[in-house]
Image 1 (tube, rainbow, N blue to C red):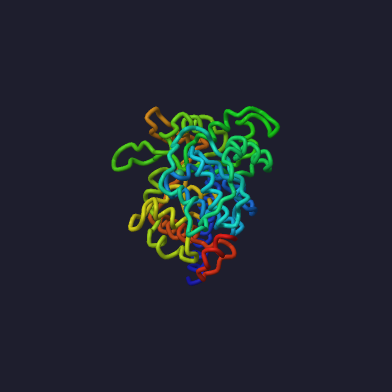
Image 2: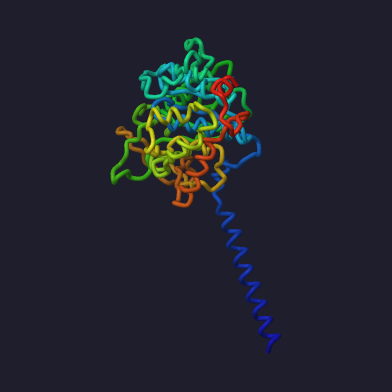
Length: 369
Ligand SMILES: [Ca+2]
């Protein structure tokens, strides 16, 4: 009787194991193969940051996140291209790169006429304490800074095939123009060059949930609507959109601005934040989420929508139509994921540059690195 019972239990156990294995196998097989583009090679991600820096402060914090990830060996910032048409945007990016000890990172600019105002924090490039410039930059002649599309073509040309991830957190101006670019010494025409060199594009754009019950005309889309439409229709690699609702629901805790950046007397991220939206305001983490996912897509910070096709209508409203084989996704986050993302973004954005100790340095030592 006992032996019989044991045999039955054993059989049931084997059956249960077989079912469990089958479920696991099915689950593994169900992992969408269309996510292959997110597989990590173990090498630092070759990253290009395309930003409208100067229009909001999340671009600045996101640049700090990139530097922290590069310090950790997770990415290499190949270049920064700018879609805000003000000369101080390039000078400001260069100053921040110098602050992190990487002033040599190439920068490209646009002459699009889109958002030509100086904004609230770009004047920091000229801030002084006595005779000393707080945030030195090495751009003496803005006319000598290359055009963004020319820089993009050079950076792509010099990269291995399918190796580059682009994080676009402003308007689609530069990338749409890249698609229009003709063959030259750097390679084939824009679409072919992108298809050959770019692995995928992470972008903060659009909205994929109603905002306050309404369709939302997201800023990055509407400020250069033809470019956003062109990108959605013609960009030849996978695209992952961080929609307006993602950054809005994961705010940057402003207490971090007050407490986490005091390892130097003057910090460009904290001072930009103070000028743009001082505490107690907790600024949404729009651009930071797109950058984080670009470098760490495999850490379960977010989930992905089904594959599909994004449409951008004449009002700038974005839609996502799920379809098998589609190349477009948008980010989704649970409350648990949002809490994790908020904390990791604080830790990365406020991570001290290499060579800066926890002890506050003199201003001179901190900024003449
Ligand atoms: Ca932005």
